[in-house]
Picture 1 (cartoon, rainbow, N blue to C red):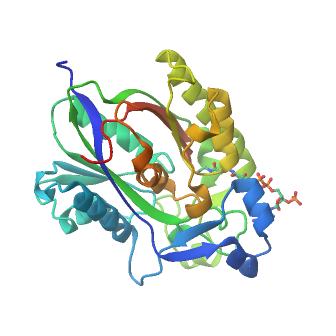
Picture 2: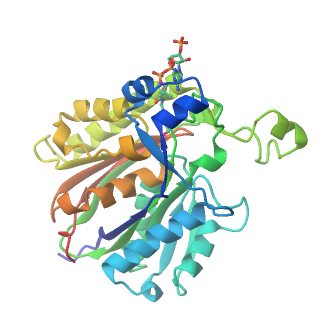
Length: 333
Ligand code: UT7
């Protein structure tokens, strides 16, 4: 086959050591393990505690893990894409710093922001660079230090999010493996329902914005939930139909880990058995850009060459979508 497809050929991940359990949250806010577990599926999440360490810390560790596992020479990487909603700082691209730190000295790099769909959109971007024949090795990292933008007195948000990162390498494939199709969507109606009001160009940081707590995430959970359930299920079902995939043909659903109930609703619509649904929300909560690559890393042993994977995500903006990918390798490269 002469056509170039974009395959994932290596995976890496990193989560911080510190575990914030539901039991500890019970001592911080008015909540309980039973509520969190039944409403979200989350039992614990990881928090980056190292002083002065930002999202780049997580991204570098995940990329280094990939480099060690795969044995690739970082000098061969052409592009480092960092999917993140929590860059180290507003200006000075975090991805550029990460690329330099991991020794990708011949790469260019930049950040990509689409809230919880950052990694999924990044997969599309990475794949396009590979399919065009322009680049041979694109490192896509999804990393977020969500704890840096969460108010730990707000029980509506602080129970959900955690810190973490994952990385994948995209390379050309000539056997038809890798990305097969995508449906990516967005709708600005979502802006009011999941946001940080201050610190941007509309409302720059000031004494008042700090005093009014406007630098942390606000979420109207119920509304986002409603859109997420229909959005993620719609695109996942559509991508199956358009590629003539039955539920038997799909090996794995790799869905954004925001709420177990949203994942279940998507799997139901696709007609998938629960043993085909990758889940780690109970361990990490919602790590935003980290969820999809962390799933790949946790379940890498189970993925077989030729398996049909459906990725799906939904996030702030709103942003959402689905990607159909054929897995390209068995664990040992
Ligand atoms: O990743 C980006 C996209 N984000 C998402 O997909 C998140 C979508 N939303 C959700 O996952 C859910 O809406 C949440 C998990 C955020 C909330 O679950 P919910 O079932 O929608 O709960 P709710 O906000 O409707 O609140 C139900 C009740 C309320 O009490 P009343 O008014 O019924 O008396 C809340 O005050 O639960 C209360 N509540 C809590 N109780 C214990 C809200 N948060 C908590 C809490 N612990 N942490």
